Length: 210
Image (cartoon, rainbow, N blue to C red):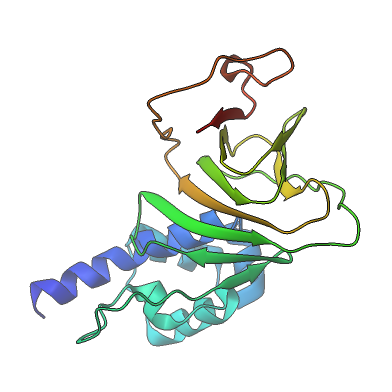
């Protein structure tokens, strides 16, 4: 087996872990969905077990993504970027990166709804940075309830209960950078914090404007 193939196989475990954690799914939940034991899934993600076609098919079906996206195999002779939307929790996620680990980039689309939804906060490991392209985002992190307008930026620790939705019922488009290791995004300039605006010392979301 050549080195390029070895590198692809070695990256499968971290890629599977990154996909699962980016979606906020536990090993127990994935095991219940796929019928694969938690111990087997854990060994796959840690690289202690090589993925078989049968296991990858189970995971591909559970995540609703092509096998190529789970394995990260290069597409020979095709230099185009293939973006495959993922629909989850009524929202659309478009992966913008194919790295097996590190920072993951997504475009997120929150559809318009007849009336604003009630928050249903979730938690998972990592740190998230977001930039609103269009619409008005409602961002709930812990006890803080923040409105983020188009062209504004926010970042927060995803281990805190958090929820993203439309603030006014209209559609929202945003870019998201997610880092499992909790590495903050660095932005060179920041406007002074005004009264009522969340501060970074509280552990809640940090909102910045461009």
